[in-house]
Length: 69
Image (cartoon, rainbow, N blue to C red; front, side, top):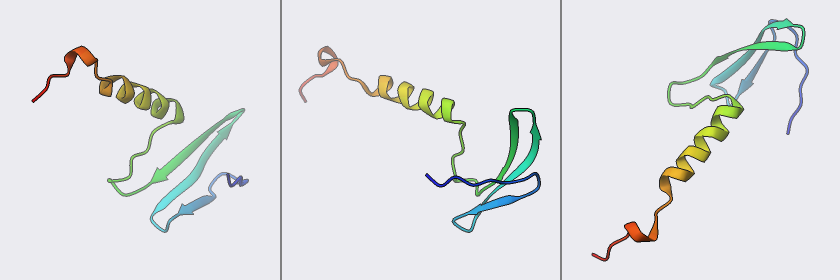
């Protein structure tokens, strides 16, 4: 993991086409602005974990549901 320090208004560029900017720092809360191509999926970490769990539960197949073709 790369760990960087940034101040308000400073940016990071990822892979040449994704920009992350520190927009505001208030107390222990940081607001980030992200500019990325439409095809790049951006989720908060807790939503990504929830999404992965939901997808895993949707793809589970009960053996009773399987039928021979």
